[in-house]
Length: 113
Length: 111
Image 1 (cartoon, rainbow over the protein chains, first blue to last red):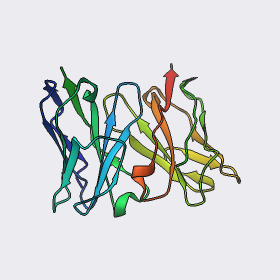
Image 2: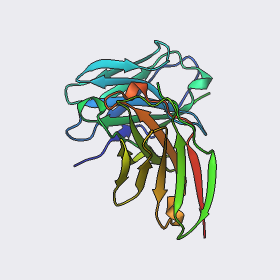
Image 3: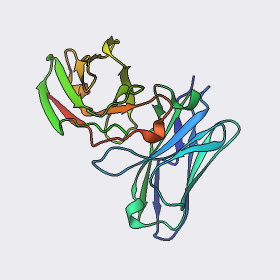
């Protein structure tokens, strides 16, 4: 059984650019959630996908968007990057729309300059 | 949405039992209490989850009083590798989008 993987590990972008982060969910999990974690803070929920449909969203602007594919892997896209978007982006997978426990990937460290 | 309050930081020593208490005064009937552990530059890792009374697994115990307005994560005989941030979350299963992650409790274990 493979765990949650994310790519890339690190990324440096310039303000105004666009970025795509990728996540492969744990085998058998149909739900993927994305989080943004600034230094010294807890994760902030961005959105959740269940069976390829977004079924929950946090307080993030529309320039944060996502996709879930038939194999339940997922992408997070961020347009018009701002300096405050610099953070660790975490992906978590779970079964049955997040019942009980989530399994987190190692994260992607995004730096916007 | 239930909000939690937990200490910002705690210190302890190797071999001691550590108890981290979380307050959640507005917990709803269908809410569960879940604890995660996070090491620097890693994703959080599930520790334990419970609804009432006591839950124990190979890593920790979770104590929940009858009114469920607080909970205590107990880590037996800690080691240096238990140094991490611990998060207490309250919410209904299936409602990841309703969970609020605070800053957690930074636990430092000393030799």
